Length: 225
Length: 225
DNA sequence: TGCTGTGAATTAGTTCACAGCG
DNA sequence: CGCTGTGAACTAATTCACAGCA
Image (cartoon, rainbow over all chains, first blue to last red; front, side, top):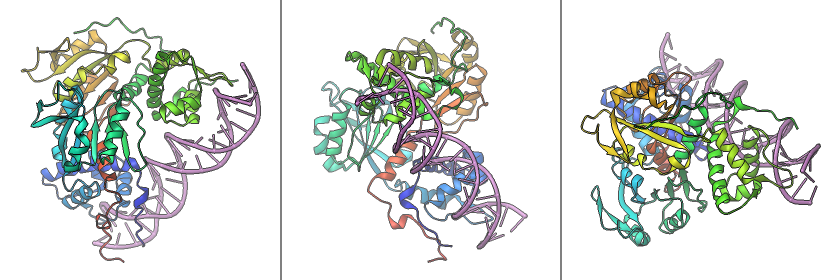
């Protein structure tokens, strides 16, 4: 059996699921569980057992037939695959409502993502402190990132002008962008962008409410609390 | 021309893209543009022109051959498809960092999503006000939603206990959930859940930084090669 | 026996390519 | 002509099903 590492062709959804597996493995470890089967992982995650095994198979062989997977070992390997086995510096642009909320997000720490700087272009905000970080002037991003060396950036700015911000980030050495603005970014080939669009998510949900499209059900006048 | 409404088999990604088209159409309308071709839409959105046409084809015929699409008409029809042609009441559970930030999110208004109540189970928070909404005790959700009639809920609570919250929401008549907690929810067949996982997004980005995976990250089976 | 790892089959989603209408 | 709408071809992702190992 020649195990061939299909490295170049890992489906994107696989990477997202790896993060889910990791979360469950951490829970299992805390519960002192030492080994786990793909069937048990399906119970915990809702993700098909064959899918779990195939996802792992893109990166090598991890389990013992007849036994399952060693929780700690698998956890360790997934963190290496996702490159969160060591600290990943991340910068955030936009200290508005959403941006500020994200600074306090505990998931960063848990996953070795370290928020190392927050930027904004609003002079009224520059200099103030959120969660131990002083808000920096976005004009200095290029210079400051020479020290920080962040390759990942989170964009929590309004849609207007987000492209210019992205361009500047690319100039500053950023290779991966998590974009919360409702806009489609143009970036060089070697830069990855993931869009998080609340609007899109809500649209999908809205479509699925109240059944068929020709819905005769009257939307009742709604009060507010 | 036989117009067939393929309603039952609309790909999920199509719905998300409809929201993107809508955004661009609103921009075009503001710029006084009256008609648009699928090729121009590709330029504006980065989404393939054939994809745009096929997405629309699931819902009928919208354009004029040789001309394109009437901006206002298309806009109108997409809002009807997504059921955001009229106000959609939405409730939010969890008034923490993220939840509070979402209350101020301007995208709700723009898309006829109206946040009608915010709930939390922390007595210290119940009663205080964010953006004109008084935080309600989550224990009253079922009772209050008899008036509010929200079918969409946003979950911005910690992972622990999120399943119980979801169960209660389903009991309260909620049919669609936008879940921000890093956990997999079990809900009845007729309830839709969309998960937004920052961690998953960051994991995908992290994987793509610093080029290809190191050879040492793929661990070959010990007894082979 | 009970499990993994993986080709094969299946299903979902995207893009092509072109007939046909305005 | 220039464009839409759509079957057909293609590509991606998921799930099945089973050989083979501990």
